[in-house]
Length: 126
Length: 126
DNA sequence: TGCTGATATGCAGGCGGGTCGATGCTGTAG
DNA sequence: CTACAGCATCGACCCGCCTGCATATCAGCA
Image (cartoon, rainbow over all chains, first blue to last red; front, side, top):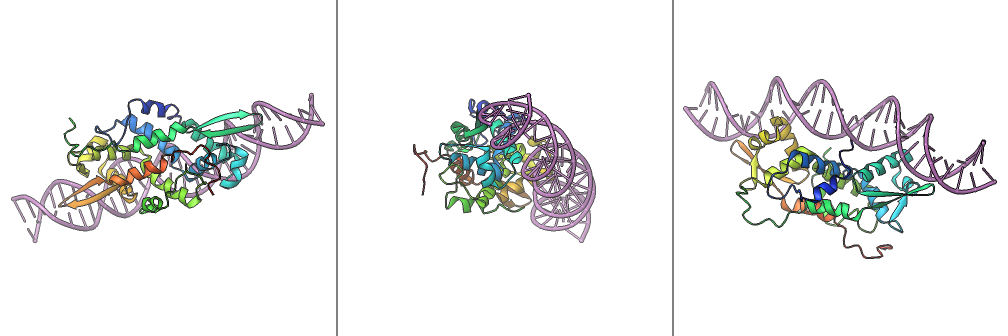
């Protein structure tokens, strides 16, 4: 685990995209897959959606447990994964832990997945 | 399994996005997660990348086995998952099976993940 | 200091998924 | 018709992950 973290930042720089010209390297594929794995779960997608639609764009665990229908430890687990993937940021205020999404994070993923205006004849990339 | 298929099309219509206003429903979350799951694998990301960068934008299994370093059955397995997710299309010509990516597919996912220009106060979407 | 409530962590069970070898299927070549 | 090559499918193994229960940690409060 922990294969993510600053993975997003690392991919943002050189703009590693599976839809660009050159085939992506194995390491880049694993980093991107790691972030996508964090997204590829119904509970975590709903968590992101719930947090985003919360009054101040933030929510604590106690607010998320009921809507998800999952136990508190499980919710904390998912929040941990999303945070480690760089999709969420955590702020502890008193007894509560408030989570909000990192705006640029998902946008970065969307960019990586967006084909850069494929130039008609993209053949012979070498 | 098989929870995908035309999942992409179903999500495209009502523009279900986890980053829009209202929290997404469980069913929508599961559909989107299903498609993302197909993407969230290093081997499959490399397959998409390899196919996209191939001379004619298409490739057969025999061309993909070596670069991936995986067995032929495993490659076929991944191609099957990507195809069922609506990300690839298959065309059998003679003995060979040529795969090419569905352009709108990944673009659709990117759209779903792109925050719709969050309108300052995005609350109360109703 | 001791207690209560909000989170995080450890642990274990169960299921899904990635991988490969073996096999079946289908065109193509001879 | 037979042999062979490219793919798909099957069965099985193994690892990782989602989940909940139990427990630890920490902040606020009496």
